[in-house]
Length: 235
Image 1 (spheres, rainbow, N blue to C red):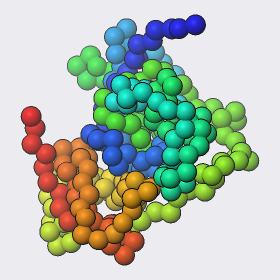
Image 2: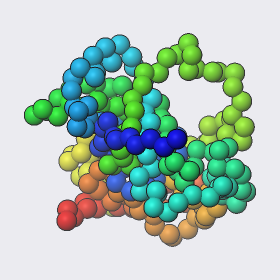
Image 3: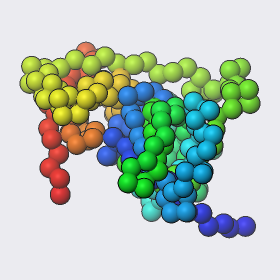
């Protein structure tokens, strides 16, 4: 049976590119997003009582991957990016129906000029992600501390962030325009967003857009070194 569904909300996120988005939710608490309710769902009645919960489940689509299709096996980063397992044994973004599931912290509920929204933190969603359902997290049922996590039982190690003189000055400028940017950058880089199969160190400069800035860094001695933060020109 096929069903047609429409987004109930659109996520506004600091992540403007797929690269560097954390691989799981809540790993980057500084990543705050806004879920803007859409169409008939842009109605405060749908949000009545939601403030009683502090964590929400989001069902969403990996919308930028849908056109590329999917394969029955994938190479998860936690296995070094070279070992293939079945897609249902992973949270890979290339899936038969392209759906994702994230548990995020509820930060607030509001409206601006008739646009009702939910503010959440710890998101792992690309800017513009369509949200197909929002459900409250129920601790007595949803929390399973004794569950086995397979090859992803333990959280991956985190990396520290430092900055070159130029990078430090650039972070200060970005922070003045976008408060919290430095913390967001530190938490994003702590997850080591490089592909699991390609984590060489050296002079290579990586880059990712967060908010309206292009964050540029190198990896040396197992640490992230920010070399610059450049404003992204609006098109």
